[in-house]
Amino acid sequence: MIEVQGLTKRYGEKTAVDELTFGIEPGKVTGFLGPNGAGKTTTMRCILGLDYPDAGTVTVDGRDYHDLGYPMREVGALLDAKAVHGGRSAYNHLLCLAQTNNLPKRRVGEVLELVGLSEVAKKRSKGFSLGMSQRLGIAATLLGDPRVLMFDEPVNGLDPEGILWIRNLMKALAAEGRTVFVSSHLMSEMEYTADHLIVIGRGKLIADCSMSEFIAGSSGAAVRVRTPMAEELIKGVTAEGATTATDDDGAIEVRGMTAGAVGDIAFDQGIRLHELTTVHASLEEAFMELTASSVEYHAGVPVAATTSGSGA
Amino acid sequence: MATMTTLNTRLSPLPPATGRAGLRGAIASEFTKIRSVRSTYWTLAALLVVSIGIGAAITGGTEASFSHNPANKAAFDATQISLIAFFEIGQLIIAVIAAMAITSEYSTGMIRTSLTAQPRRGTVYAAKAIVLTSLTLIVSLITSFIAFFVGQALLSSSGVSASLFHSVTIPQNANVTCPQKGLGGGGGGLPPGCKVVFSGTYVISPSTVLLAIIGCALFVTLVAILAFGIGAIVRHTAGAIAIAIAALFIIPVLEQALPNQWRWDIMRFLPDAANRVVSVTIPGSADPHLWSAWPQLGVTALWAAALFAGGAYLFRKRDA
Image 1 (cartoon, chains in turn blue, green):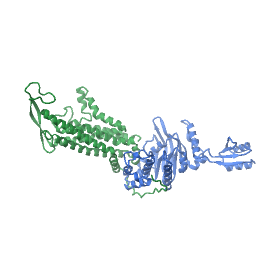
Image 2 (cartoon, chains in turn brown, red; image 1 turned 180 degrees about the vertical axis):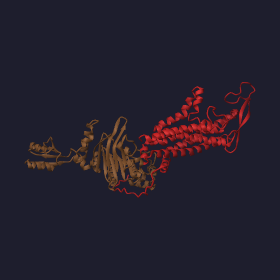
Image 3 (cartoon, one colour; image 1 turned 90 degrees about the horizontal axis):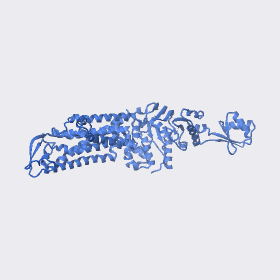
Image 4 (cartoon, one colour; image 1 turned 180 degrees about the horizontal axis):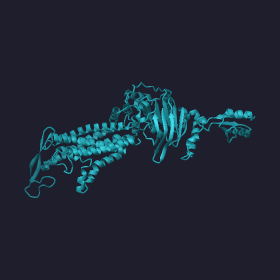
């Protein structure tokens, strides 16, 4: 369990993370979403004690990361696959990490086998492709059999096979009851893997909800209605608190109301309907909408306010 | 690369954890790090080649000069001349190894991985320093002894070579007498017909020689700690090496340009001054404005301690 409380981190004038508060629960893949520069990596660096917060606290199982007995047994983190000494072999890289946490040597061979790097174990990692480096980084996270795993943009720059591999790995890790916290700026990626979402923009929390809530709760979830009696329908649903918009092709988009409720109103008022469809926004659309609005806000306006109601 | 269709992340169970990750694991890790990169071997090889090879060249050249001018044998310090390449140039190579022990973590990004595995930074810093200092001390001692023995072997026929096994008598003064007045005493070879008469002797005991050999190794080890501290402060390989070379090599040269009185007051406080005292075995031939060997090594140690402590403070305090 990772708890982030009022986390604030500034680099000089720039506030990278601004009073961020959220928790990550075990047994799930929690997606950490935000445009580039939103503060995802900074948040992860603060969780790992690499950066010191200017305000707020971060705890792993109730403790400061610096105080964990054997950090690698609690948290496995991969922030940057290229953050290795390229002159060192894959085996020795993992060995020197295992030794810090008194992990048995045999573990190194096991994790190399698991990620499929056994054959290049003695090769210097300088010559590794990004996909191989990514696997080496993941092998390191698994050395201590940790309950919490953190990956920063793990699929960035990977080929489709590598992406699929990482996707399945994250699901498998979560299925074993581990906490998986994975950041991405690719919404589509989250759609396949994440159960829960934490969305940030400009260092502030935008949303913290389950994936289905995120999609359903966004204003992108609408009911599309076609009717020859448009005026009456718009009157009827707006009276009940919904908002409407008319598409170019004449269809009415009703927001803030379920398809069932729209159908009932139509029936009660004798409005003939030619179409009544619930339109699910994709995660991508929901995200664009949220972050676009966060970008419109300027400093001092609480961006988090835009999320009220998103957690249906 | 093998495609993995099924993924079983179950690994063999780990032994139960007791206590916490500490210095012992960190030392083992740092030892693995330093022995698993080629640059360590390249730089250590360079240290040996330079210290022994250039040492031999200098010693051999001096030996050759004896046949032109035997007067050079007076107060000749065979120990110092065999070690000069080690403590003057070898120290710079050690400074590079030491600075890189920490700056390479930053240049590669490895530091983030290292500090995620062991977030207690004081432990990481101490482990790095312990491994580096032990390695440097051992390698320096080996280099120092080999350079000494190679040098003495080259001087063996000169009659003024130093020895670790018995006392050696070295002539104190050389008086050159020539048939024509005014020709003696000039630089270069001895003019024909001149004669060299030695007077007085120095008796150099094996313990004096041993102290010089070990003292040079200690000096170079202190240089390693100093350069390590600089590396931790600047976190940049080229920058750290440049500063270390400036402190050990360039500032002492620039300092020579100062008026004598200032120069004499300042020189004993510079980190490199110790090497010009510890390597001396001939009584009274060290610069009279420097302190004796141990206090002068103490000055180097203070520099090393200050930079090491500064590095430790910043290593713990700054974002990685």
